[in-house]
Amino acid sequence: MTMETAPKACVIGSPISHSRSPLIHGYWLKKHDISGSYDRIEVKPDQLDGFLDRIRQGELAGCNVTIPLKELTFEAVDQTDDQTRRLKSVNTVYMLDGKLCGTSTDGAGFMANLRQTVPDWRTRSKHAVILGAGGAARSLVEALINDGAATITIINRTVERAEAIAADYPDRVDPHGWYAIEHALPVTDILINSTSLGMTGQPPLEVCLDGLKSTAVVTDIVYTPLRTELLNQASSRGHTVVEGLGMLLHQAVPGFEKWFGIRPEVTDDLHDLIAADITGRQ
Image (cartoon, rainbow, N blue to C red; front, side, top):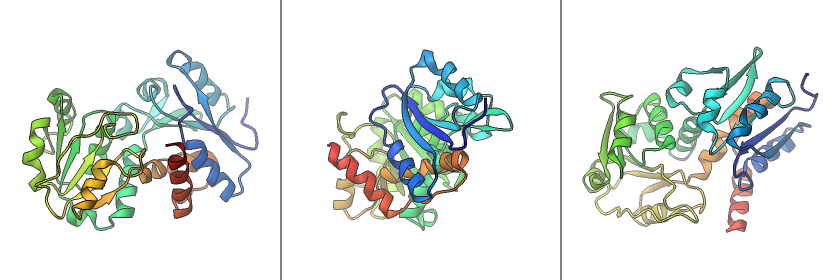
């Protein structure tokens, strides 16, 4: 079976109705006058293998992957790159040379957003502090190290999870429990919330930024709301802040290029479109 002239892609997960990926990719399809499509498809863990066969058979050009399927997809694809093998998580699936390939674009999306908002971040940010030690934190550690961060501190309520990530990056990552925040803030160049705390419908992220280095950049991977309480607090103190929405937009770029053959741009118009959708649903 071969793929139709108009390529089709989608985002899979469960639940999936909240995903803004169709709005993002739909914007690019229209902008570049591509007669393809991008949809949401509900896929539960026990349905994953059958769904991926649809890509192998050419029915679909590929897909994005969200919770709870990222780790399962890593195990199911035929080929991954070195970075993705370290992360053990896949969010983008595509075909190459007859093989089902998987990669993770979360880290690249974070870095592209950071570079776009703070072009001189490398000269300002030698010490990064990441709150949380989940899959997102692991992606950010990998990306930050590859992009030149000298030292990374991971702070997590369960220190063992931070230690598990640090073990893969000896001499570069320092794990601590939540108690360490107060001591880390004065020497922090970039503070990153990688948890879901502060997201609409989730418990708040209770962090007081008193003592944070005055030149520090503060960023949050949460994008609902667009401006979290962490970012509001940082902004009121005069810190440069980086919203999470940009990461969502930039992480979508590589997949679109692989499926539809054109590398799209993250523009103000696209940002405003997705921001309006987020605001409208709140």
